[in-house]
Length: 129
Ligand code: ZN
Image 1 (cartoon, rainbow, N blue to C red):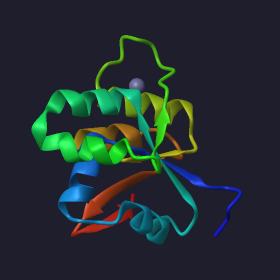
Image 2: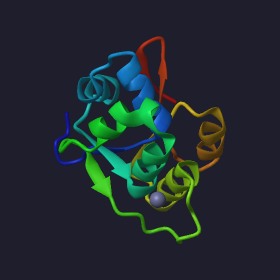
Image 3: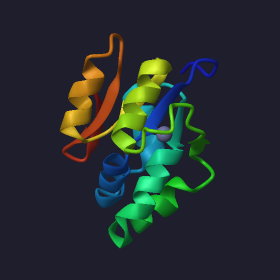
Image 4: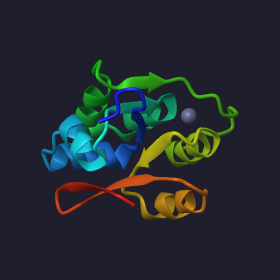
């Protein structure tokens, strides 16, 4: 493990939803999958979207607000409001982020960014695309 070179994981709404639904230990699963120190992060837009999504996502919101998750201030233009666009933008600007999402459309978009990395969930496990 390389403690000086952690992976920053940018979490999407649906990703954290499925993590909790499948009772996956996020931190452990990330380390296992990436084999390095990982820093899970969440952006303002994702937190805002979770708040708007209502009761079904209450647990996800509470989880992301815990202190182990880094809260990112968004630096993209104000006209970006959707969590998808926020994540796409952040990953394009800052290549050290790994997008963690289960959204098929978003995965397709991010794959087009050279050198991008994506984490998703399949059969109760996190895997790297
Ligand atoms: Zn944002």
